[in-house]
Amino acid sequence: MSVEVLPIALPERLTRDEMVVVAASGGIEVRSQDRWVAPLADEMRQILADALWNRAQAADTYRAPLPASAAGLPQYRLSLRLDHFEAGPDKAVHLDASWSLRRLPDGAAALCRSALREELPDLSSPAIAQGLSQTAARLSAQIAGNLAHLNNGQAVSCAD
Image (cartoon, rainbow, N blue to C red; front, side):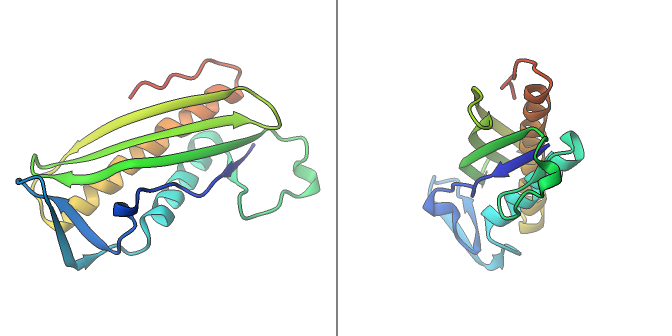
């Protein structure tokens, strides 16, 4: 099947190159020496595309036209918004996201929201990066599972 994964929506505070951590005071700590390998939306998109392929054999077609031989494949559109994606003073990563998944051309939409938490051994930059990666993978697995259910005509469960 194919999935048109729309550009991932991020709040402006998450479109930074530097790693940002929520401080115990509630403010933020910008770690200017610690930078992401790529923009967060690009990294999340790659993790999501990998999960869609590995769990549901679905290819992202947003930037690639469908060949004529794929005309009979089920087609879906996915819209994802990350609301929170941060490490906090509680030594945990928090990810809040919402998404919609619709069969094209006019299928009903599955609308979901998820709040995930991943414990960290400490607040070092490598631990935070690993925690964010694991949390993104868990979210992507949920979305891929939703897609597989929807494609099999089953109800979509949005439970964390």
